[in-house]
Length: 172
Image (tube, rainbow, N blue to C red; front, side, top):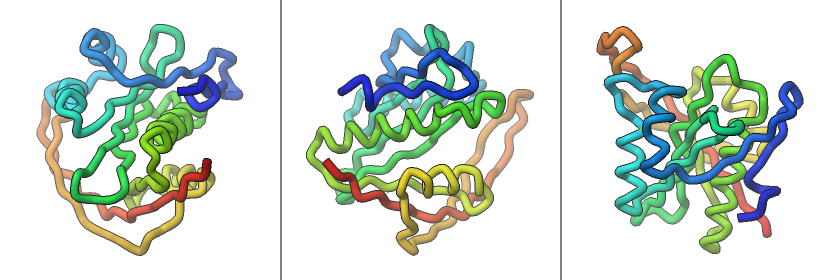
């Protein structure tokens, strides 16, 4: 993986963002800096990574994780999917999401694949604008997904997302 594909220097902060796959030793720091509480998403995605089903990525600014994402390898679907991108609200707009996506795209290219997908909730225009800037285009495919999660006060919620599937043709 080239350094160029793995880093981004946000305009507001001179410290570069380095993206790499998570390892088990990162779990405590991920839980401390990017807490998911009872949802335990970091452990869940690390387990998926251990099974070979996905790569769990973290963006780091120095020794601090500042965002995460998942690259899913679907055995019965031609194109891998970038999913579950998470960047804390206070850190958005600093190039962290872009760095995570570009790193994932590099992993897809490294496998010799030419396309990657990403889903975006219809209620998330900021993410949709980012994906458009990064040359993702709408496939016309839609679905509705519902899931449960716990908030920071350990209260259970149900969320429904109306998702548009986007695709990017990777070059060289």
